[in-house]
Every structure is written in structure tokens, then in C-alpha cells.
Image (tube, rainbow over all chains, first blue to last red; front, side):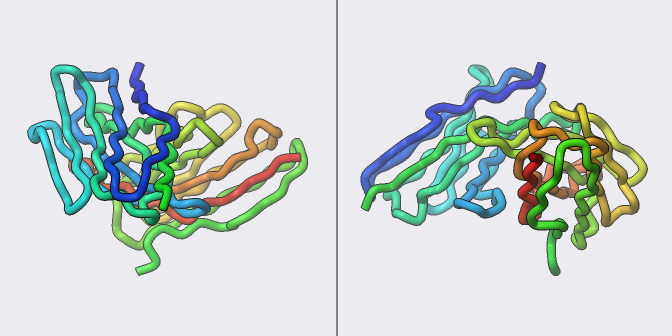
Amino acid sequence: GENVEQHPSTLSVQEGDSAVIKCTYSDSASNYFPWYKQELGKRPQLIIDIRSNVGEKKDQRIAVTLNKTAKHFSLHITETQPEDSAVYFCAAWMDSSYKLIFGSGTRLLVRP
Amino acid sequence: NAGVTQTPKFQVLKTGQSMTLQCAQDMNHNSMYWYRQDPGMGLRLIYYSASEGTTDKGEVPNGYNVSRLNKREFSLRLESAAPSQTSVYFCASSDAGTGGRGEQFFGPGTRLTVL
């Protein structure tokens, strides 16, 4: 069945360091991979996404990479700031089912 | 634009009681979704509606029913609440039903406690 695994479950970094979160997906038909950020008590919000015909996408301090052969994708945050502290979710979309399957989340803590 | 709205924000039920969670979107999206979020388990899809007039089960549909009332509104009903349904419920919408994958926009959530 469809499955998305996300690691690590928690990540603590010093302000200014980089953070990397990794996800793997099971269905090779997946073709859209968004990342959501959820601050405490708030709703998830899209921060970046990548489609299957692209290997990398960057938006200021965040970037996402995709390896379709290995069926994994990663979120990279550079020069982390305290306001980056949140839970991050990866997800994989399948056209055949009109569903987003989410990973279990990574709690990122940026220490000042 | 209000985006996606949900009512109520908080609810406490006793085991066996029923209730309906309401969701509405004003972005003219075709697709709507209901998720539940439990600690350490991410977002799990309960039901979804790819377009008006259709509904399908997600990963965890047992104990729930849905109604796509019109293009704007998608409600989630708990017929006989159980403590295992204590969770935060999010509604979301996207334009995926038009053939695009689209960003999913989430509502503010409903925090439900079943005693």
C-alpha cells in the first residue's frame, strides 16, 4: 500500500546550522511531493513542493531534492533561525487516487 | 477570502454521542479532505471528495461518515463517538479535482475530546 516514511522524528540544531529531513515513499506512481510546516497550535501550511520531473527546487533558505530512482526526497533548511522551529511534514501525491499521503512529521527545534 | 473554515473549534463529547464537524471553503476548489492528527502519527486521511458528488474512504474511515453538501461544504459525522476518536480534525481543500495536484489549504482545526 501507499506509505511515506519520514526521518528523523525530532531534530535539534544550533541557530545558523543546516537541517535536513528525509522521506521515502512506496508508490513509484507518486508524482508530486509537498512539504508542510506546522507551528504549535496552528494549521499545516505549504512551504515548498516539487514535481516528479524536477530534481531540485530552491526558495531562499529552503530547498527540496528528489531522487525518483531511490524513491526518496529531502528538505534542506540553511542558516536556521528560531522561527524555523515547528513540525515539518512531507507528503506524496498520486494522481490515481487523488490522495496525499503524509509522513509522520519531524519536530525541529532551533536553539538560539 | 476566508479560505477554509471549520466549526466548532473545540468540542467535548461523551462516549456514544454524535456530532457533525462542518467545513466550508470559498476558493472554488473541487477537492476536499478530512484528516485527523494524533501525536506522533502525522496527518491521516479519513475521507475525501475529489469533486462535488463523490466521496471516498481514506486510511482511517471507520466510525465516520461524510457528506459533500455542495461544492463549498464538506461535513464529517461521528455517529457514536468513542475515546479513540479524541483527536484534532483538519479539513482541507485543493484544486486537485480539475486534474492538477495543487496545494492543499487547511482549516484551523477542531479539537475533539471524547470522554
